[in-house]
Length: 290
Length: 329
Image 1 (spheres, rainbow over the protein chains, first blue to last red):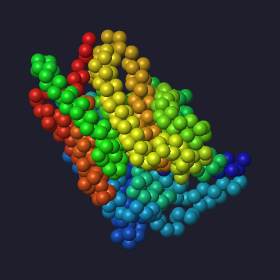
Image 2 (image 1 turned 30 degrees about the vertical axis):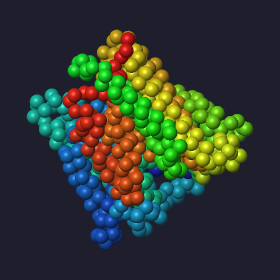
Image 3 (image 1 turned 45 degrees about the horizontal axis):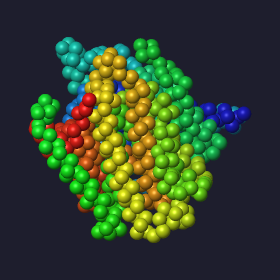
Image 4 (image 1 turned 90 degrees about the horizontal axis):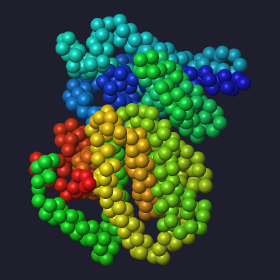
């Protein structure tokens, strides 16, 4: 019994990380109707930047995370302005192919500058800190912190979208960029800022992932799939749904790993396919989409 | 298009003669080429067939999939399973592979068609990953590390290595010609017209009574079957199958590069793209990651600044074509 409780708790904590993977993906899709297929590779790139910056700045992972978020945010802004903007409005095909090409470039570019070996970000004592919930269930402080960060990011995104002037332009260009343009909103700038925020979140997610597990240049696509599955399971357009979706995938992976360590990822994918079969709109569909 | 329609038919006929000549020269390769050339050309035929099939889905049916490696893998695994578990002649595994891929494609489509556009693309990738991980659990084929084709089965393909190489090359060429002829036939038919209408304007197409769902399902399953057949051929040539190789994302990545660089939505484009791709690979692939970075950059550049690809640049505004895909009533 307590074994199952442990699986549930660890799955929920892992789900927080998957929600962080998914948040940027969800934001970009919500605003630009574009799925950034390179998102997983940006998460890995974020981890590498945090690792390098953290080491250069005396080994503090928080400093590394901040530098990584700034660097990826700036990269996102420029990328959107210079390249991706051209892919918007050219139909699904163009955006998918351009971001897919970007994913190949990033993955192999990382291989060029970093070795193919697995790396980890050293966060010191917090990695092993934890407390017992009784019944053999132990909660790690860092995984709990990641879950709290995921909730914080979702709250911040909701505040940004619904309570600020920038959020108003964001919703306006998502609805209809042309009309928003007539009202004086610079749609291209809003798109670029949305991409910057999305990639800054990807950098944060990458840093958290790098502290929790090892990563290598080829690990991006898998992160994209976990994030994507969290989005679909939760229901398109719902940030809390994405958190719930991440938790579902995390718990399913935990159950799979409990049966056989080789089944961890397969169980996550199967849970995604089952939800797609039974509840194609996701667990928490946004009302206007339902 | 109207300009094209007024062109003399002789133009198209010259193209046809050129193509038949190319196929004839290729078909005689076992008589004068070495072992390496045979393998390379067999691989070329398979890659081009995969690219043409991906092009049919993305360029004509509006189904942008990044999970076609699922069907390459299913085809390869069906062939190896058939050969390992039963004493059937190995080449009988090829139709079996096509059948298996089509049978997997039907439930996959049932699930994936719930996802729109870009989400369909990533969903198809998730399905391919699921199948890769499931194949890793097949202990009868060596689980995650894979299995070689038993030596008895290898001998059953053909008695000597030379004959086997020639046979597999001819089969690859035959499959390529079959795939291209099949796509050409499809595009010229009523179904092809409906497909293009659906791609260009789904709402209007539906309003004139085109059964969008059924049509897309048929094209998806058909392309999957052919992709499975090519997958089985590729791994019959390699004599060894493993989940990571059979369900490798690279099968789709390469097909995409070939189509995007050559020219999406045409039959000529992928041919040019495949020639370009193999030339680059032979010349530069020793640079590994840098080579792939360059390929990705070329593909993005083409997609954004020359979406009609090399073929579009070559044919210019004259709009000539080797394969006339207009409907023949």
